Each structure stands twice: as C-alpha cells, then as structure tokens.
Amino acid sequence: MGAGLVMTAAKRSRVRLLIVTMLFIATTINYADRATLSIAGPSLARDLGLDAVSMGYVFSAFAWSYVLAQLPGGWLLDRYGAKWVYAAAIFLWSTFTLMQGAVGFFTGFAAVAVLFSLRLLVGLAEAPVFPANARITAAWFPTSERGTASAFFNSSQYFATVLFTPLMGWVVHHYGWHHVFTLMGALGIAFALLWTQVIHGPKEHPAINQAERDYIEEGGALLDMDGRGAGAQADAGKAIKQLLSNRMFLGIYIGQYCITTLTYFFLTWFPVYLVKERGLSILQAGFAAVLPALCGFIGGILGGWLSDLLLKRGYSLTASRKIPIVGGMLLSMSIIGCNYVQADAVVIGLMALAFFGKGIGALGWAVVSDTSPRSTGGLNGGLFNTFGNTAGITTPIAIGYIVQQTGSFNGALVFVGLNALVAVFCYLVIVGEIKRVELR
Image (cartoon, rainbow, N blue to C red; front, side):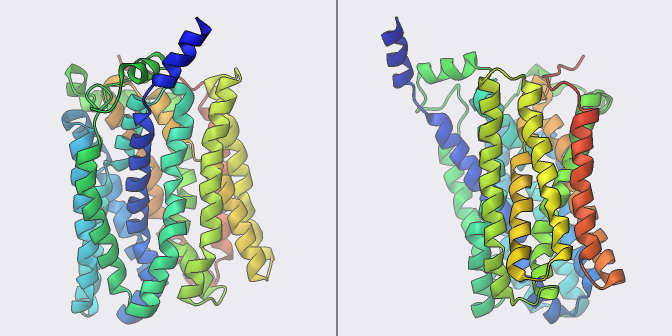
C-alpha cells in the first residue's frame, strides 16, 4: 500500500506551481508599475516644479482610487470570476501606465493634473488584483501550502524592486523619466494576453490531472476559483457589516494597514530619501534599493515557508501564522536605527534588515485565504485591501508633511517603525484564533 501511495503522489501534476508563478509575475508587474513614479520622481519633480508636499499628494493619487475601488473590485470578482476580471485589470492598468509617458507634452498645472488623473486610473484598474490572488490561492492550494504560495506572490513587491528599479533608474538616467512609463506599460499589455491563455480554475484546467485535483481538495482547497453561484449574490451590505463586526477580521484589517505603511514608504519615499537625505544620485539610489528589496523578497519566501513548516509540525493555524508575523514586524522596527548612523552602507544594511523582517511578517493574504467566507471571498479580500491600502493615502502625505516641517526624514522613519509595533499589538491582542468564518 505504501508503494501505491508513493506512485500516486509521483503521478500528481503540479499545475498549481504554474498558477502561482503567473500570480507572482502579475504582481511583480503590478508593483513595478506602482513604483514607476518613485523612480521618475526626482527628475519629474524638478521638471514640474513640485515641492515635498505636492509630491506626497501625487504619490498618494494611486491609493485614493485603489482604496475606493476595493469593494467594487471584490464584488466584480464574486460576480464575474477571477480570470477575466484579472485579465482586464492587467490590460487597463498597463495602458494607463503607458499613457503617463505622454505627460511631458503638457506643462505647468495641466501636466500635474494629467499625471494625477492617470495615477488615479492606475489605482482603479489595479483594485481587484490582490483579492483575486487570495481567491485563486484558496482555490488551487491546500492549507498546508497556502502560506508559502501567498508569501511567494506577495514577495513579488520586493522582486519588482530587485528586477526593475535598477532598470528604471538606468532608463531615467539615459533616456529621461518619460520612457519608464512607456516600457512598463507595454510589458503589462503583453502579459495580459498571456494570462488569458494560461489561467483556468482547478475544475477545468486542461493540464491538471485527477490526482492533483484530489490532493488539493482533500487538503482544504476550495476548487471553485471564480466563486460564482448563489452565494455570490449575497447582500453585500449585510456581508460587510458582519465582516466589520468580527473581532478577528477587524484586527487583521488594522494590522494590514500598519504593515502596508512600510510597503508604501518603500514604494514612494525611499528613493527620494536616498537622494535627498543621503545625497545619492537617482542612478545610485536605484541600485542601492536592490539590497533591501532582495532581503524583503527572501524574507517573504522564508516567512511563508516557516509558517507552513510550523503547521506541518503540528502547531495550530493561529500559531503558525502569528509567529512569523509578530517576529517579522518586531525586526522591521530596525528602520528607526537609520536615524542614528551616518555611513550609507550601514543605512542600507538597516533598511535591508527592516525589509527582511517586513517580508517575513507579510502573511496577511495567507490569513485572508485561511479565513474568508466561501461565498464572499472577493468582498472580504477587497475589505482587507481597503484597510491596508488606506496607508497608501496616509503614508506619502504624512511623510511629506513631516519632511516639510522638520527638514529631515528622521521623524518619518520613526512614524514607519511605530506602525510596525501597532501591527504586533493587533495580532497579539485583537485577532485571537485564526479560523475560517461563514457568514450567517
């Protein structure tokens, strides 16, 4: 019988690995397109005459529409399914990114208004992505692999910096900031076409065999990637009220806001910090950002692997998710140490340590996949991402005011570090047991 089990396991297809790779690539392009403005920022600000507060508002433009569109985006996923909503999202956000390269044809206030509007549209189009990632992961992966899978696609935010920040810095240095948007937009449009050919649910994917389908279903995968049906027609208002009244979800939502504060510092102000506070050129800043990003990527993979390892070793789901999250957030507070050192190499080292910790602790989407009600997975993912990405509005603006009023980034780094501490409080005190909830 043992030999038979080994043979059955050996014959399982591994289509889920292709699926999570596609999620990783899509999310890498997603974050690279968000970061285009931070790389182009110093040159763009000089050309358009923007001060720190103005840049803070421009940086935040993406997040305003991104946050407002989360719940509608989640509803679209529940109503029309992940595959085609996701494909449309990739195509649209890439098109709007491409169009930002034409901002140079405008001057003065018109240029700022066009750029702000296009960033709003990018945020609007990107809204369904992470709720869709969580839905697809819940459909394709058993519980014991879900932490690693979620950490893998979530770590793409760092890989985007590793891969694209030096490239974008080089493009700005040699060709001008306009062409960063052109390059990234064209890449995304091409990938949207590939997505439609590769992505299918576990029930209908042409390459999956019955052995893999049985394996993931027995391990807790939901199989229904699109989640359509009677449950998808549930009263959205009633569902949102129930989700917000659940203590576990509320702690997860607030914790994600605090964790995402670190993400948006890195996506918006970090290159500016290296240029303005540390005196690096934009080309040097692009390469200097690689080490922290690489450490964040490694930490992200390690956090998911550690969480799933703890689960397989007999730890509860609650302990398996909370241990990496709490430990990682405490480690990320090392960002405050940058205020007390002078050597650029040490600053980069501390930033690398902070983002390594942030990567380890970034398991929020695994928790969403573990806990979301079956009929409203898209809606819950949208609500989770609404809370998290509100930090995309508040963080750039708050840091802009701190820098403007104090003349340095010292207070900004303390602000970021304290958010990590609040995330620890949320998971230790508010969240409680992590378990799947079904709405009444």
